[in-house]
Image (spheres, rainbow, N blue to C red):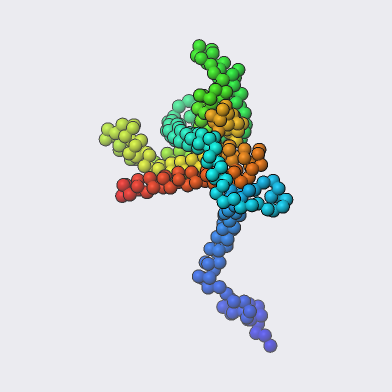
Length: 315
């Protein structure tokens, strides 16, 4: 006859057939419960697209491949073809110029705005929320608006003409098209920078700033010696994210200039888009993507080395 204590499963009585995990076993199970979804997400949305991109860049991948499944292996021929094209050199130069100038401008202007928002002035409460609007707009909408503003008969030229300044078809002139694209890119990303840096500045110890000011340190000295080191981890993350985002810029350039005039604003991302989705040459399109990925890795490695050197110098 079964004992009541076993049948009812009272505390302190081990129920047959129900092995219990140890504390270490439960911790391992919890660890894998969190890791497995993250690993699956990483493999599905990063490793698989990356591997497929490498596969496409080394094959003659066309629209017929989707039907037949056949993509002849060509090795590094796609890379040789795109590097031999004169437009590729121009695209690399434009991509690097846009990235370096835009990210540097966003850092300087974003920090200046963030420092401004720490002060009290008329509109200081609602202005930070208002400037978020450009960042909330889709890139296609931003590019469409600015394409109208920068056209020959746009509002920018109307203002310049009113002030007696020379006007220009900013996006139609090869000399001004690339600077115009950079201005739009900075304008679209600046609210993001200023918002994040404003939040970071609130963590700077006010006591240190007051002590430095009493010791006679000027605004530039306080910025260089106290504020920037205190928010450096935030700046590092913002720079890395902005570099990657700007290197991959496609939609903004596509709507503003489509790479023109005379390829003066063409970028690697735009060439990848053209090859894959306009000419349906997925092999060269994948090769452009891998070239862009390589440049991104170079930026990441250089920035990591500089950050490590800065950390060692501060110890």
